[in-house]
Length: 610
Image 1 (cartoon, one colour):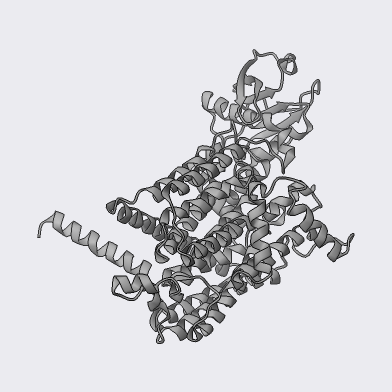
Image 2 (cartoon, one colour):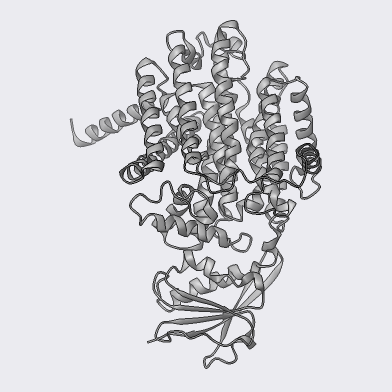
């Protein structure tokens, strides 16, 4: 056998093993392995918080390695499915999701539209700093006392790409993009199992940016978008569990579910929904033998009868609930539930510092609930539902009166609870209501998925025709709404309306360092002249972009501080007059702000140092 044949054989054997890893369903042997894994990492997590040292060091490495393995297998699985569909000349769905992902990617590093968030700079800087610590500050906190673990993820692009604007944006964008593609893939799988046109899977994903809050906070590139990303991952992995419970699926759901516990506080609400659904799933396993279910999943066989008879075989997903494997599947699901609960318990025992227990005392809970629901569902403070308001209200009404599935009822009750507690829990302070609404963004992917599956069930049940032209027109309508939202000004975190110029000063300073051959990690001075109080916090940005720089913010006419002129020194100002007292020539650069339809000019003076 020649070398080429041997290499091909090795590749074939490797891909066979990967395929087996991806498709292997729960059985008594791998179920025991999963239970052992859940037990070990749960105990290790509690010890990591309690004793730290070697325990937090080990837990951090296992956590990151597991995440990397799951990501690699996910990318491989997506690539494998794309190739399968391409061979069958099924291009539309994958082409549509690639275009949607490309739309989101277009705004990464694009400061004509996107922001450079000073909170994000501090968060990513905390992650970078943590990588220099023995245990990566795995159980510690960082920005405002939030768990540091999420910032390790945000800092990874900067580890490999340097401290650039694109790396900062990418740190908060790539989990969102992964969640987006995961959700699309699983919805597409469900439609395939239901024998429904798979191109319909584009509709819920294109609906996501048609909700105005999603583009606004995606382009803010900060931790507020992280719970949305994790929620999409959780939905996709739970749907996979219902459709076809596999060994690697359980590992992935464990990793994502446990990360809910150590992320920005709204993710705790998604954690609660996930635990609730895991309990309901276990109940559904008991109900299976009675011929009823609370899930629309493929393994229930509800929509498989005709298709399987035509195919002359039993659906593959049905094998997951064969009698010999059902007890182990139930036990493993219970182990997963306890695993995620233990990770949350560890944060409670260590005294969470994100003020999850801090609640308002100025209004009665009932009146606050009625007020919160009225304002939220009428878009009183900011456009949240927009064009989807009618269908969302209809879905919630039908589910609450029992016209839909029990899981729809659960989702609607959860949405009402999220809206209430977003206003009831104060956190660090009571912000303006239009800003507080960002806490509710996690309900968007959940509602989108619930509504879409209910509509898909209706279409299948009554065998309603689905025209390709209709799908195309609806997707184009949603895409148009999404494009419109990407160009809108801030309506939630309105502070960023008034500090738009500062992101261009950051960009100008990055180019200036490159021009003068100064590395962003070296020591140098940056002096910013501005009369805009909102733009004086250059030191917050410098924590990420210029960790060793000396930064100063001055007003017009304010005297220069005592600085080391031996270091390179860079002055930036809003207007040329602010630099008139300096003994150096000033130059300038103009930037076009497409989103706000303005032009921003910054001026600079440079002292190269000695």
